[in-house]
Length: 452
Ligand SMILES: *Cc1c(COP(=O)(O)O)cnc(C)c1O
Image: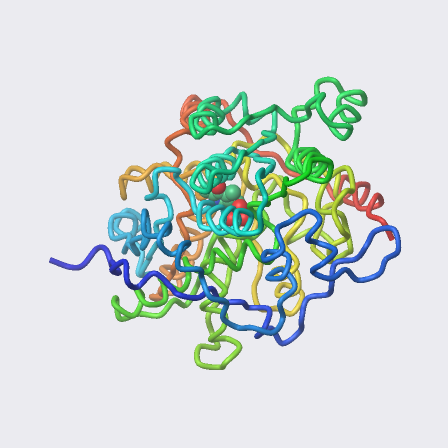
């Protein structure tokens, strides 16, 4: 029987995260204070985040950062995760490509987000904080943080984007099951939320607004830290356990990826799987690997955004970050891949794109669900609508290779399962979904609001 899954023992959970910032040929530009336009340091960030994560965010020096033993112990509840050869998908496509996926959907919370929620809550506890707060789009991050907070006896308050609260009602129930309080955003409980509701009472919410609300709560509540589930460098750092395991597992399979693919919201699952392999671009041992980030056609910051200093949130509470952005108050269409509805790309990713180490591709909503359905019907796993974008990009690459008579090894990250996303599959199957494109003038208009 040919081998389908490549499994590592618990002792092989990585002992260190890989900090790509130390190896990057061009270092990312620093975040700026929006008022003075002066570079910020780790101390400035520790008003909002716990100190250790603030330090990791700015660390350009240490290539390897030790994973605390208590965190590894919590990782062992669900790690390591399998690397799987997608034989059935390959068959259905009739492709000559070898397709592998790293399955981050196997933990009960259903996505990769837990890989960063655990260390963030661990550090908060270590530093004497009592509360954490955050935003959540589709709900995966809120679920992961609610559980991680409970592990360490912290209170969690989650602002969930209103539209996704309605699209995915069970997500807030999961968060409350883990003991968190959940508010629909925009809410009336913060100044940022009130401002948005005053302008537009029917606004369905966005990640940008929800971030503003959570930061406002964190900066006005003693002992409360803000935790972010994507975009930032320390989040991508924690996610490198994905790629570090995958690297060992690809060795077990006797292959090395020619293409590494992940879906892209703010960049954490992409960075998680890609950065450990990218270090072999930098050290010259594997120079030809291609890195592809799959974003929704309706939120195309990687392919059509501009590299600018911009805010990470809608209200402008965050530092200015150098990133590919569509403008901080870009209002993405209500696609079902809620986790990909974010206006900007992380700072590291933005620099890597600028330097030509990776690229973005745009996937229309219908193509993403077609890919998701094919994957479900072949491999037996219903993927998260976000992950469907990675599958669609993988299928494009596989078909291209088949036509060209090539057999590349493609590795993609299955960032989560879609079992609480059935309303979106139902809409797709009923023919009720459509594509959303964005016009150039819409993008240009939005970029005018970027602070210069
Ligand atoms: C949050 C989420 C994403 C997008 O976030 P990234 O930081 O870009 O990884 C993708 N897939 C799933 C399943 C998610 O929960």
